[in-house]
Amino acid sequence: MKKFAVFGNPIAQSLSPTIHQMFAKSCGELIQYDKIEAPLDAFEDSINHFFADENTVGCNVTVPFKERAFAMAQHKDAAVCLAKAANTLMLNPQGELCAYNTDGIGLVADLNNSGLTLAGAKVLLLGAGGAARGVVHPLLSAGVTTLHILNRTVEKAQAIVNDANNQHVTAVSQQALLAQYDVVINSTSASLSGTLPAVPDAILANCQLAYDMVYAKDSGSTVFMTHAAKLGAVQQLDGLGMLVEQAAAAFAIWTGKQPATAEVIEYLRNR
Ligand code: ATR
Image (cartoon, rainbow, N blue to C red; front, side, top):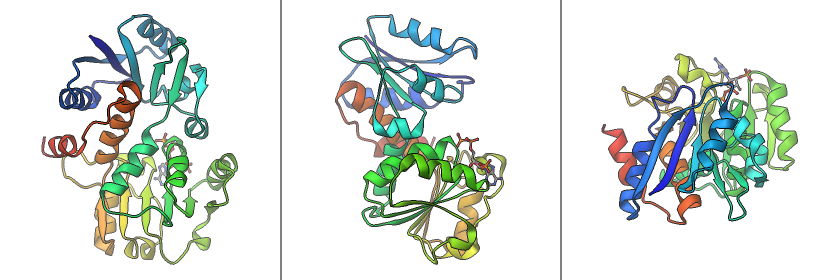
């Protein structure tokens, strides 16, 4: 049986096995997909051991190992190089480790699912950590023409802009914001602690979509989504769709099959 896994620490909370087993079933594949809690001081050994099994096809990598997964790989595409973090690994036919970051592909797919047109869109990205880095290249590839990054620490936003080296991306201060963005994406970890990143009310009031990359667990809404809804944002979404779509992109890289995602998102939403 083809073998897959997700590596993290902690990992008990991961929905990846459920998601990938649903994909496998719908694509007529029989797979093993495990959760592996790699020791903090032995992630690389765990990965090497995993790929030494001839049944292994690929793995996902999550917190706190994405940067180390990126560093280990021999082959890296432009998106993963800008992200400096990998969430998907596989071996090529020569047995070399290839790294991908499908988080941004997942975000773009979920934004498309919401009905938003990304070609020519004006996007405000809040935050400049690893989560923000991972989505910049795919947003640009999707045709976003204005990508403004607003972060508490301006230097971190500027560092992403420098690495992206693309005329459509700019680090902005609150004073330099446009009057209107099509979508405002919260990539900060503020939602995890129930707080809000600083952004003028008018920006959220005037956007089509307020998107929180964190997914809402029980209430169906994050503090950011609730705040944006109160201010009058037309639509609010959490990151559950992105989670499923990034998994679908990884599944496609590994198997060449593009799984249907809507029923998986629906299942997890109503779980
Ligand atoms: P991740 O890998 O999830 O992106 P990270 O690299 O620690 O995590 O980055 C978290 C991001 O959220 C950072 O941009 C951080 O802002 P700073 O760069 O100024 O530290 C942002 N962030 C976290 N809590 C925040 C808050 N309460 N308000 C605004 N921004 C916040």
